[in-house]
Length: 221
Image 1: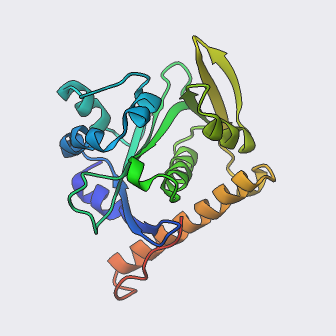
Image 2 (image 1 turned 45 degrees about the horizontal axis):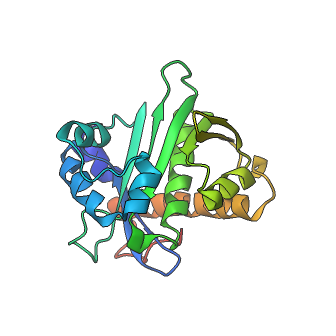
C-alpha cells in the first residue's frame, strides 16, 4: 500500500466524550512514533500488551510494528489532531497466522490518558471490519488471565478460549453479517461502532471528492 492510498484511507471518528480522533493505516515512518508512544503507557499497560516491562523498544521491534502490509499484517494508528505533542493515542493491529490463514492474532493498545473513552472499542471495530474484507474469520487475542474486564467483554462478543502456557487465548468469530453477533450489550456496542465506522468512511470519501464542505465533527465510536 503506497503513501497516497494510506492518506486516502484515513478518516475521523469521535470518542464517547466528543474528542475527534483520526484513524489511518500505519506507515513505515511511524516507527519513531511507536517508540515515543511507549513512554505514554504506564508500566501496567506495557506489561498487559507485551507481557514484559518493556522499558524501551529496539529499532527492529519498532520497524516490525510499523511496516504493515495491510493484508497479512494490518495496523492502524489513532491520532489526536488537537494534541500534536502526542506521537499517537492508540494502535490496533492483527497479524495473519501462516499455518491458519483465516486466523489472525489481534491486539489493541491505547495510551492511559485515552483509556475508558471508547477508543479501544473503535479500534476493535476497525480490526473486525478489516478482517471481514481480508478473509480473516477469527481474531485471536492472547491475554493475561487477570485482565478480567477485557476477557468478559470478548466472551460477551462470542469469543471462546483456552489457557495455554499461562496466558489466555480467546478466539473471536468474525461474522460477515452484524446480525449474527450475540444479543449482548457488548455486541450491541460493536454493531453500533461498525455502523459508525462505515458512516465515517463514507463521509471522508465524500469530502475528498468534494461532495461535502467542511467537517461534520466525525461520528461517535
